[in-house]
Image (tube, rainbow, N blue to C red; front, side, top):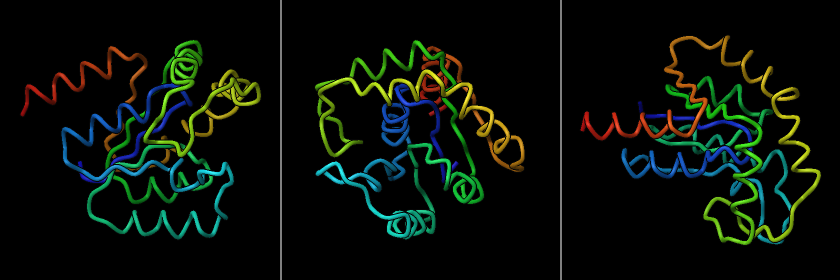
Length: 165
């Protein structure tokens, strides 16, 4: 494990999981949201995002946190390990609500109000996004894929990592 993707519905805890994995492995962590979003709430162009992402993918070791379906294929080609946090919708909605008003190192601003469009995206993630992700993951070969359906499963993984040293 040297090139890792952490994917899942918004609010599943991808950034928290990725940060913990980075601390345990020493691999550099890159938040895709930080590549894409600017502090003034604008975004970079697709070309600028892709250039930054390609520079990361060329490295020998990394952890990438985020979905960004448009670039998932290129990231899957280069990674060797995928962690998919496939948690229930209510867990993800609660995750988003719990971070409101708190500074985060994975986002260049503090979310102060509930974004109804974003919450609808989460509510529809299982129907609209999950099948595409499952399809893409089903087509990759030679990758270690971990699918966690609860926070407890992720916690057990870290516990096992710690025990293995």
